[in-house]
Image (spheres, rainbow, N blue to C red):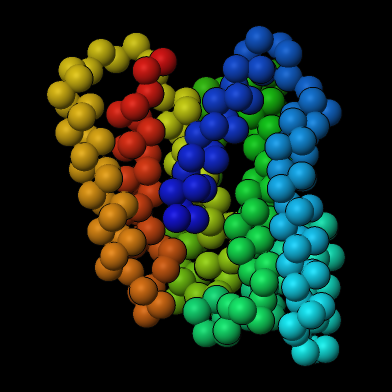
Length: 232
């Protein structure tokens, strides 16, 4: 699910940024204001609930770690905290109520970089976005594949080895819209993409080397679903 989320997030955020930059209406303040208004209320409610329940149920050491994870998320580095402190598939998840925030931290770190990257590429360098995004996608995917064998936890949690999943969505957002594709072909792609995602969901477990090359199956599936249902 996280991998599908990353592809979708990259697609949506890049589509919004490209629209605003090309229309000369992009503003960093407005961009982050929208992100905060969308994420902060639900995040604050979830964190408050987790802290309340944790204070009632957790032992002192686990409660301390919960507090540290709250601080880490406020600094946008929850993924780094959990990389250093835990094994996603090994430690009991009920003792880490905010473990799911690692993926939000990765997304937020991506949000810190992608606006400046696209703005400079389009307005200063006047390159096609697909050039720089494609290069970063290839570099991140290669790094993820290598890091999977050197440090699997780093490959799982940290932005450099996860960025390619969001960049896949970004590349999809830059794809030409002028190509006319028969509806039956789009429908076939949608079915195959859904099958790819379901196959990964049912076949992968804690022993599956991940992310790396095997993450391509759900990620390409997510990209296929987005493309096949994009009417723009």
